[in-house]
Length: 402
Image (cartoon, rainbow, N blue to C red):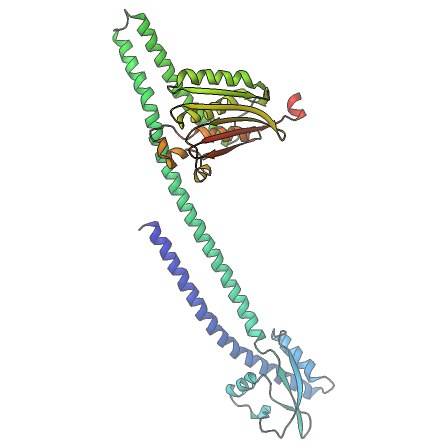
């Protein structure tokens, strides 16, 4: 059975519950009316009996007392004087069956109690349905609230199922990306090791040294990926201790630009706009975060890459901005790009086909920014540019003195 089938089955079950609730309310109303008619009749009987025993009391007060005793305090009535000679007047002695006082209840009054030979009094019930409708409203609203809770629960369960499916999909994508991304360096390490062990390069020291460099680079690549996963896990669980200090921005950015210029196969032009020279942060993690932004700018770019890196101060935050002239990010994708294992452009843009990665870079940037007490934001327009901004707060006096 599919999840859609169970969702449909739940919807049908809710419809049946609503239908049965309507039937129950209708039947309950009829039953409550019979009980209410009996209780009103009994209350007036007891009131007149007590009046017979002690005529210093008022019938209306006695009737109210008896109604309150039967939890019918919401009923409103008035006492009317009637002629006992009237054709429609019903005395207690004339009542034989339930239908007799049920008819009186439908006419909204009680039997007539004689106060002399020609006159009597009877209670006129102003709101005969108050007792029954009031209770039914409690039942109705209670059932309605229960149904709302049920529907909310169903919706939440549906969302959980969707989230579980999404997590399962992301795990599959992550496993595939991890295998794909690690296969190349592992293959290079394995091949290089075999060639070096074979002794074919013993008489070619330059090539042998080059192979050792390749092995070292690929091993460092694998180590960097492993460290990134571990770092994100520590950041998410608050287990990573940051060593903050004043970090010179320009040297850090220039080192990164030189590194990416050397390693990328695309023509890259960097433009630096360093207005704020120092930033209070953990240099290692900030540098890695900015490196991820530059790496993404190159990955998701056109044939010629132009990257502008800016540092400035805004609203008690020091900001580092990385702007590119790449393919851009759709508004729909911007809601997901910082999620773990999410490679938004690879999912929403055909231009990013062939780009490999774990989908950890932007999640890493977000967690590093949050750990510093700051945040990361994005501004983008499809086909034109993307600009990511890391905003870290200015240090407090306590942080500086520590």
